Length: 256
Image 1 (tube, rainbow, N blue to C red):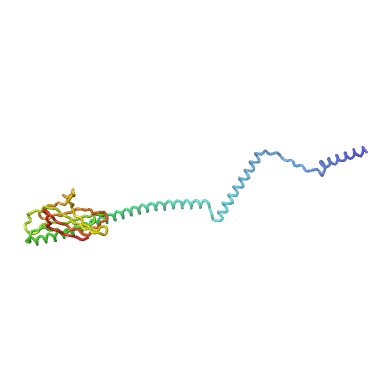
Image 2: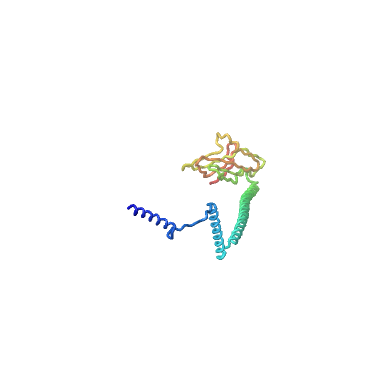
């Protein structure tokens, strides 16, 4: 019994040895040991070569397809230069346009000034014609009875609401021209205010500036002044009077 047990253990041991060193033993590979950093360097080298090869293949493919990188860069450089030239030309054109607009503005301003001057000259010409007609009438009236007249009464707004400007020509006619008029101008102003008629006389009795209405002449005198009416009032007519020693010597009215 003991002998059979021993024989069985020996048989198992022999079978194990034969499995390791016999024909059925596992294959053993013998490799040379390489440090890890050489393996890393080799991997990097392989990747670099692969990337360079891939880039070469890409460029070759672009050349075959008609896309050359250098030609593309040259074309982009030319386009950038052209864009810079166009921007420079646009800046010059903008400067010329601004200069042209300034010139047009100057010409427009000059034209407006000339128009105002022409209008002023036309008004002055009209006044001179009226003066000529007035003096011709004075010459015709030399033999008539002596007296005083008011001519060319004008009343117009003075730019601001309720402000007016008046102009007139006071003159002596007929008889002796060496006598002198000493008196004042009186304005009788008819108004419409709040749907009602009203009247205002200038200068007022208590007006501290009534001396501005005084006039003194031998032959003629131009009178120019301004007046103001109450807020909301509208002037409908104005009558100018030559008053001497409390007596009205001449008058003329104008309707607005």
